[in-house]
Image 1: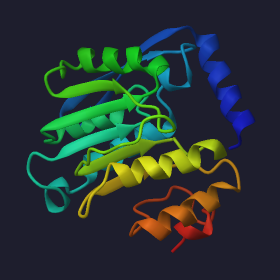
Image 2: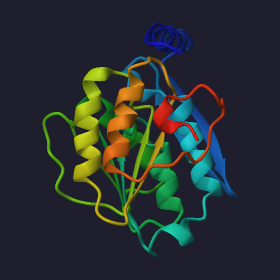
Image 3: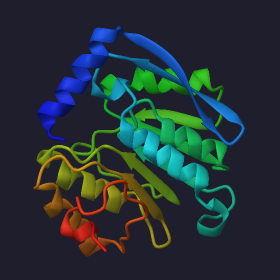
Image 4: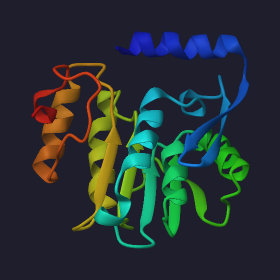
Length: 207
């Protein structure tokens, strides 16, 4: 899928109307998802966000993270993966995005009654260097523009420490994405956790 396809999907959502509520079932809990189609790209829930949330549901959190782990989601949009992390035992979760996406993230936190555990704050990777580290860093569908690659890598490096885990849900749209993953592989120990379309990955993610 390229950026033109992404724009077409976004337009289709605009045509359906502005606000939509749905639920995502994680174990025995219904997570409320509030979307405001047309506010910005981040105000709709995209496929990678659902994929990352579903991966978290089946992930053995206790084997990989300390009890009461800390978590941040980069480019959170509606914040579904971060909300899932909060329900899986995180002691604190930060949902971060540009200013335009913050209202929808806040609406989702409120809809799931998680205001005491989940903080929503503005973060522009290009403007705000990260100095706080987290046990778990999440990101879904954030690798879609070349201009974002270097700021995203800096954000990942600034928000992690030895032992941190980064989970990124990703859909390849342009060939240059492969260069980004090569740079990530040079800085992090990286492995492919799950792939819905084997054989359609940049070389750095194959194997």
